[in-house]
Length: 391
Image (cartoon, rainbow, N blue to C red; front, side, top):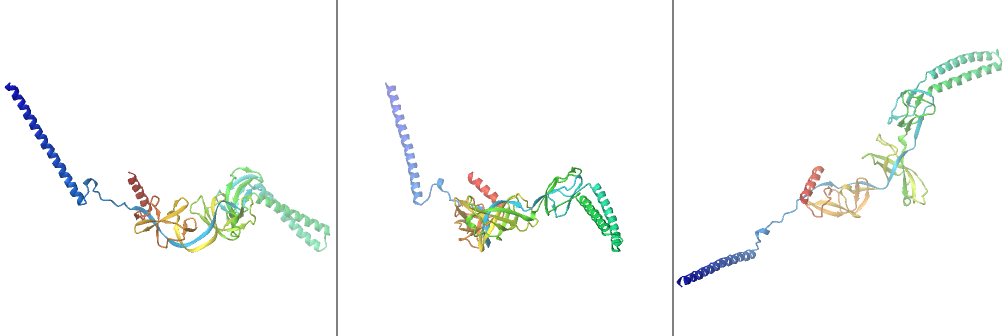
């Protein structure tokens, strides 16, 4: 009985001790929570934020760009057309004799002048015939001189004199014919221009009237354009024009309106105009080249000129970015006349302003920018910046 009671007593003591320990732990936890809450209230009252959200806002890095300085100059109003160059003179050079070609003196692309020798043919037979005819002519000419003296002294009658005169003329014509045949063995250019085709081959036998060369006169190049009918009173003969090659960059030729048709095509509503090149100036140009033709109808002096590289297209509107105080300012472009490289700004820009011509593809109004002189460096920096943003 005593052992049972002793066991119950120990159990009760253990339970009482455990409850006391749990109460102390709970009290400790409640005290820590109250202390944390007190610190939070104190921190909030001082305007402090938790360490987790305590970050300083960073300013966006400047975007590297290339700029161009706005300048003033002369710009024209033009009517622009696409066309193909043609030539007024393109001829084929034929063989006037039959025989073997001994020598070819020109190649395709060579410039030749009228009368220049292009090739020589075998001519021994023609030369012998010419020498023989010349000898007979000289002999007959001596006989006629003696006959003339006899006729003047009335020693021969008129018929004998006329016969001698006829024989002399026959010998002269025969000699001229053989001389022409000898000359025909030399192939000459009939026009000035550039050799565009060469069929003649040394050692080959050709027949008369066979084409051997083609020569184009590049001094008479022109482009036909179809002008809308509403410009009939504006486009007139003598207007200045400019022709740009679409195949060779930077090649430009001065031109003028040579002819204007007074008839408007009722189906297309256009009329034809011929724009001729004034001077080739030794630059490469050939018939068949695709060209851009600009007929100048008006000119504006002291115009504010903006490079076309600065224009950003958004739908039907055009914008530019002007650099002000290290920031990009987006502006709507009000344009006037334009040419191949520039456009006239009607308002918003002045001479000396800086407009962005590279690095503006993804810019926003007010963005920080850094002007980079080297276009390549700007492009590389822009690429790295985009890569970092995407990463």
